[in-house]
Length: 172
Image (cartoon, rainbow, N blue to C red; front, side):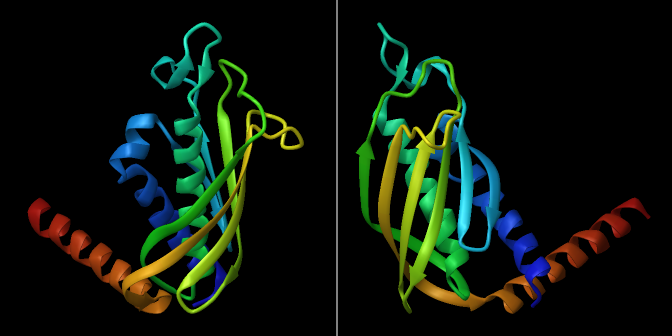
């Protein structure tokens, strides 16, 4: 599988992972980008996320979820096969309060993988990458059965072909 096919698969699976996670969806986390060993998500400001009503600052738990989700996506791209993932550890260092009204961006990078564990670092910022809201270190473990990228792409193509055939039959 060439890099373009792999990146297309990352984009498809990455978007569905974020959109398919009820907690992330409820918080309004949005898929922004995914690449080889990296992922970016956004947490748009909304009043239900506020942890301090006097200042309008987003609750730290929402930032934690953003970074955990971004790290999970980046870990997904770091392995040579596809499968389930579980957070083993997640350390968040909060550096300042996010600016009220601002979207918070979570960027994660998978900098090392072993057979079953991915090591990641991440940053959350609200517009200035040099002045983070929080940073994170994380480890994720692959779980359950794994499938090669080639097999995943083949399955995706077969599914698309079946959907096309079904649409063709129903419109005839």
